[in-house]
Length: 502
Image 1 (cartoon, rainbow, N blue to C red):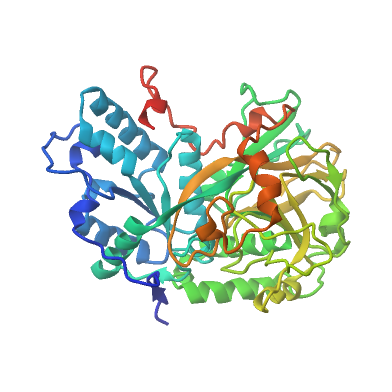
Image 2 (cartoon, rainbow, N blue to C red):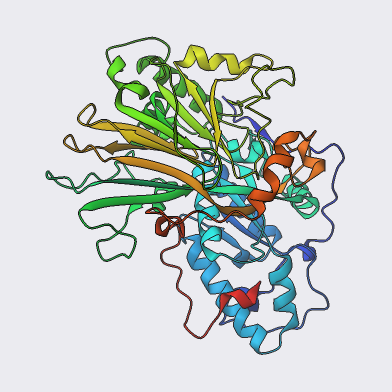
């Protein structure tokens, strides 16, 4: 079967223009390169990060094509070098050149755009690194769909089919990147805390090897200032969704099978078919012994929400049949489905509104099984809407389950839980924003940009001011929210202040 490939289509073509508009001189990328004189600064300088292991052979083909068109040093193979090391080298070198009076370096830094090609986990890896830089104007990011679900690219108009890799397709994509619109999206911090287990650590169990997103989700060391004595604390971040329950278990089975037999997973359509078969096998379409009712969410955890900053925790009443809960920030889940949908204006219950990617709120949706999930395929279909909230926490009942499955931005893991602990808590809270690049038509809605919102409502008026001035209340989770941890290796020399780069 041939690989299904595509190139993002705009309502009108965007010319690529001269390739010099995208190239970055070698001496800016590599401190050991000889400085050269350039007539003018590139209009759209890009750094391209590509996961060569994504998309079958497409990742390697994309690297080859981009390196043929651009400076080879500005196209990074993520299987060879991590993004935090690349950006560390670049930013330190730019600061050195800035001190020496190099105007070109400063201009490139201010206009630089990032491109990341891979699955959602790869994109989230780069988002985590950029978030940890905490710059006043971080470089915006365009995503190339090179995975199975491709929810992040689809949310911002870049399509969900794997791309063509020839030079004309890449030039077309560069033209779209140059003309793309910047859009802010909320970042979300995830923290899991439990008493130090008596029978050894309860480390996350990834499917055979650590997914990219789990580089951020890790246990803080005992000497860390964020650690609480007598407890194990894990933390990380996400931008699209966090899910817990049966859907994460099916995803875990898929990733495990792909790691065991990678030769069977070189085609996007085949991957999606295998995913559906595993859903059947795991009992996602019907009740089965592999997923007894005791593992339905309400049976092993209490769910609470804080709807506004500084508000009170409220317990959610969740139907006993809910097997998966999804906390979603973007309008794309499981390959382009929108679990929240668009609440009608004639609803009697006016509590729920249109979802925005930059409003400081996350949408919480429940699913009973895959048949329930199939309603997403129908016009105006959606899951069981539970809440729109600023923070959410899961408080686990003691001894009910010894593990659960979780997933962030397409990457699943199995989370062991101590049997004798009644203090296990997962909390998700708002943690700043990152900047994405959006192509037309953009599926995501922004209340701060009327051109991307497709119709405002009272939600904007009620929440915009409080989110702009949002300062989280001081509590036990405050330290954990300060850093995602995706770029722990990012260390700048003491004499360099990265804030000056913004």
